[in-house]
Image 1 (cartoon, rainbow, N blue to C red):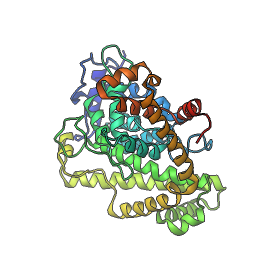
Image 2: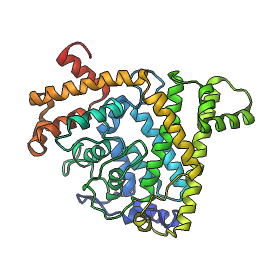
Image 3: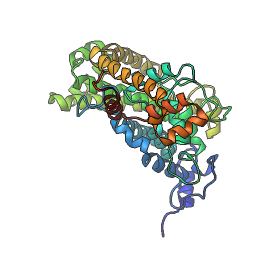
Image 4: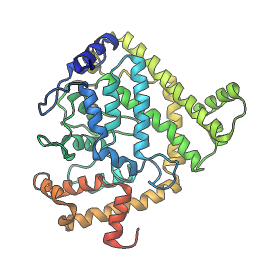
Amino acid sequence: MPCTRLELEQRERQVLASYAQFSADSRGRVYAEPAPELRTHYQRDRDRVIHSRAFRRLEYKTQVFLNGTGDHLRTRLTHTMEVAAIARNIARALGLNEDLTETIALAHDLGHSPFGHKGEAALDQLMKEHGGFEHNRQSLRVVELLEQKYPRFPGLNLTWEVREGLEKHFTCYDNPRGSDEIPSKSPSPSLEAQVANLADEITYSSHDLDDGLTARLFTEEQLRRDVKIWNEAAQSVQIEYGDLPDECRRYFIIRCIIDCQVKDVVYTTEENIRREKITTSDDARAHPKHLVRYSAERQKTNTELRDYLYANLYYNPEVHEPNRRAVRMLEDLFKYYMAHPDQIGEISRKRAAKDGMSRAVCDYLAGMTDRYAMLEHHRIFGLAV
């Protein structure tokens, strides 16, 4: 006999912590649907995200380095997959709902523009008179409206808990503005959403170090000297394994950093939950501060790492200048499509009647991959910027 949704829900009750978000307790979907037979509600959501066009397009969107710069550098898709893996590990250790956590992690960047955060800033500036642009809010817009796959509703019709996690996604790198999309008086999202937030930050710090080294923007010697968390991990690897080949050594150092980050979050969060007497998912939502956190000492070393990456990676001319040139393409395309609305496609033009032409053009541009934006710019204007 197959394992049914009801049996899966029963397993959650038996295995997960009392403060986990149980799929049987979901607040449901905007549009009523028959419940899945062989999956939980969050497993259905995860599959819908993975099968969306917006998810596939992440393969050709910039993470830090302009897409196509190097075969081994992260794209927005590989970043997303790493976030999901780390998020599941933390959720499992804390007894939380792995399926909900993974779904939020997989969906958190669906609304990201081409050309990374520089592209996001450019769209925000272009839309400053029309509500601005912020990729977390755009991710919510993608799953609620822009994906057009189902005959009876727009978007993916995800559960309230997944949409809550997207609306309240927040890291040191991502600072979304408030939104009225998800009506909730709770100051915090679910613990699963909080885990996805921290997993995003852990992933940034680790893979950006790796990519920066691959691109030779800094060296291991510089990191040993200037970044405490790297130096500590490098010493641990040296003690345990001795001298290793360069690629293997670097991999194990970054693996050690991730492991230390994950353990710190798990043990700190476990203590926070115990101290604050959290027994249900709604207790966690009602708490005024996020409970999924680093320890004070780990937060300090992470801040040092973040400052180093900003100074030596994100604002490095080798990263900044190609992205800046690419952003000018977005500005050119935005102005062109505003003057030639027939070029944005029938679906976008129909949406313009309700949301305005500027928002329809913004949606159209935000959905582009780096590659397609470049091809469109070349088609319209000829030579690249």
